Amino acid sequence: MELTVGPLPDKDFFNMGETCRITQVPPHTLRYWETHVGFLRPARRTSGHRRYSRTDLETILQIKDLVQSKKMTVAGAKKALLEHKKGPRPEGGPEGEQAAGVPAATLRLLREVRKEIDLIVSELG
Image (cartoon, rainbow, N blue to C red; front, side, top):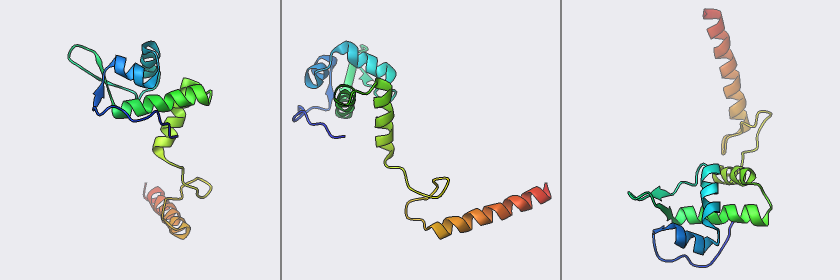
């Protein structure tokens, strides 16, 4: 999910006007995305004006790509970005519990031990 617009100005924070100009997204759309995409939260100055970080701009550009190019809804774009941030889901057994780098035999052994512990607890309780 890479989207390049060109080099960003050498700044850490951008105001609303600069962000709109760079991302080519109107202010009302940015505010709408802020309310519907939980992890897009620009910092606020003491005056209440928004300060978008470079990470915020990258997120805005990703949302824009998903909504406009891929024809996703904002909810779909939010879900796609959350899954992208989590990384790929590990493949595994019937419950999908295969941990990265843990052999299947180890997981089977742990499941058996857990069953035995549950049996002991139920007998004691």
